[in-house]
Image 1 (spheres, rainbow, N blue to C red):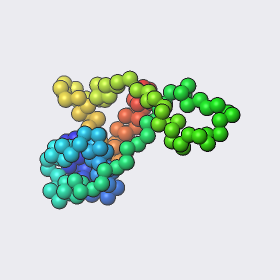
Image 2: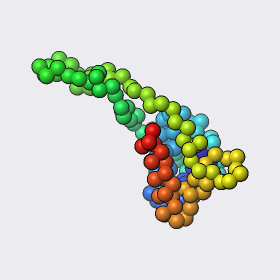
Image 3: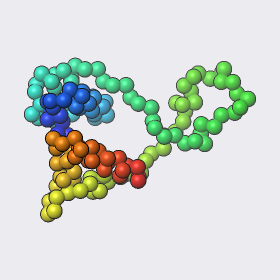
Image 4: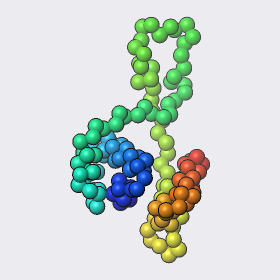
Length: 141
């Protein structure tokens, strides 16, 4: 959260747009209180984010395969199109302490500060390496 003001002012337009999309998703989940925590962001940018419409909630990524089994003789004419998808239960992922797995500087008490420095680097290759590290940790989950 503390990097968002810098990302909202980044020199690359796509970074600014992705940061704004992230703030929108955070507003969807956590409410407008997130905007008050954007200390250091320009007031006009925060006001634009406040006035922007919230993104549409996304469908769950995983469902229980046994609950989505269909009868081959059922044509689906009697049920609404989204009824089966709406009735499918969500499968919760087990919690993952991602910060504990990210690298930190020797002797540092801050979690993931070495990884954080990589994400803020001017070199594209270091930022990509930081993103790849998170992706590999999540794939191993």
